[in-house]
Image (tube, rainbow, N blue to C red; front, side, top):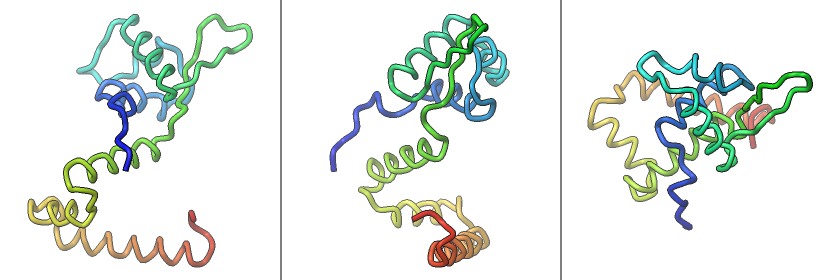
Length: 138
């Protein structure tokens, strides 16, 4: 399997900025800056730089609105895609590509209780049924 470049993954700060874009939709630098968590207040220029980095990485789009001087940024990467990328990276790097080893580690560390495992089993079964009925993703 080809290894992804480090620049492909979102950094913690990039992830926080993307969360704002996922929650608000296209937003100005000012809006993103104001909506970052309280413990993460950054200078306007820092937020602008990070949005430009996300744009260069292909994770955010620049949106020009006629009659509005302020440039808006929107998420080019969906939240679901970002989650899949991170999980895939964790499974590959820490668990040798074995999702089963990851789940077993979560059970052994008591992050997954028997009740949560049962709930997950039900969700997997429902998802499988939905796909077989032609209602779910392929």
